[in-house]
Length: 370
Image 1 (cartoon, one colour):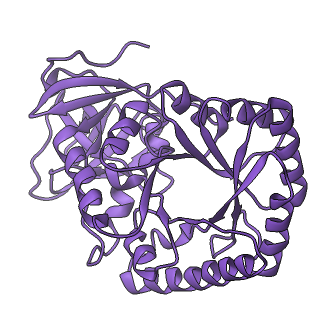
Image 2 (tube, helix red, strand yellow):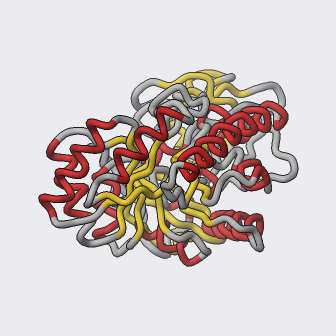
């Protein structure tokens, strides 16, 4: 599919719906993270599942990240193909086709993967042996996410022994991600959740190292908590993803020190396609243009306009009392409710600076879910 815009277009000339990246805000977000971690003994491994774009990954690495995370083998393939040399799949990989592809990637780049089962570890070893490759394997700890992960301490130690006994696997450390904490609204709630996760990560690492197995890295953390992980001292590496974009759901969080405040840089550009009544405007961006799993998008810098419902191709905006009424054909910027799945709906970022299209970046790993 061709892009919805060309370099040099004014924003109002961009066809819609389009995924717009405001470059000044995006670059300030990159700098805000770099400034926040400056001088601290922690490294950044930015999460590429958010943006699925090698061009953005390269800018994150230029800003200090040591590599990227992905959630799927196909995402990792897109990153390695584009020249990203250090990729961690922060997920379990199960099934022969995926394991073969993962092992093949490890001959081209440094590749890590998570595990929470001894049988899966043996399958990873067999795939790496067949490929003549070596994989970094991290034990995923259950630290409150209630998703994947092995219990802390003794169960994790048993799995560490399994990995350490494999010739083609390197035990790289622990994956400890408290994802449920990212959108706890109050900072005090997030701090309590991360404090509990830190205890689990710290005690498990100590137990593994007391058994004579080196545990070099504890990795994890997200955009809503990463400074709390850093301050705990239990993590060596953080994995923020949404910080570069922000979304309407993250905007509902309390943002206070020690977390920096990031800016909205990602928008869905939509056109008013109908004005069927005095209190209603309809835009051409619906469920196929913006994810609503974390709530409806918000209308950027248009007080009194609220997106209240969506169907496949339509977004319905209620016009509140005293609000400026959008005209037919007017273009509006929507802040997605959840940036990650919204990005996966598009082929291109329309990169804008000062209201003019500066670049078009392909979303190379769009649809890379296998």
